[in-house]
Length: 174
Image (cartoon, rainbow, N blue to C red; front, side, top):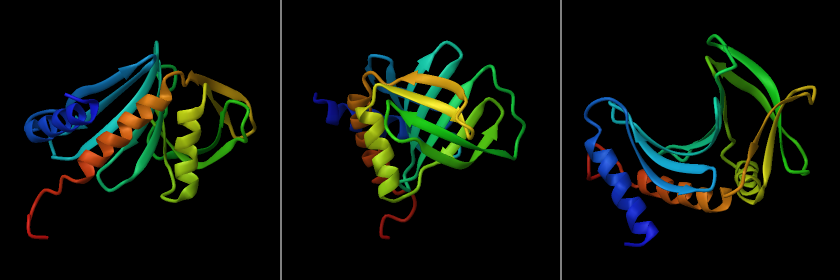
């Protein structure tokens, strides 16, 4: 079974079996990256590509509506709910990206990419990059993440996103 067929079959299996608590299945692993499909008990589903280090992670989430969200996680962070911050992300030595109004939630920083060419360009930079630097708005280093293996992992994430975007629950005649 090819990778495309495996991703489709695994994603459909998780989507179809999400009757209880959150379920996930690893679709692809390469170097520091892992790509999974996740289904929640409310019927919602997403795909995630994640690079981990002990107590730290950087994730790209995709959802059926085509939305893409960045998540930076650290056990060292303890945010409340409802706060935001302006941040900066730099991939390798390329120009920095400004993440204005990123959501701070518990141990995570969340940011939804724009649904335009800038969002696509960011994902392409991640796929081509070697290291991602997360910084505060003033440019102070906060964390950095290896992007080794990101090209193949982003490809798997896009394939997973294609599968979940084709699943339209409800009226099959719409």
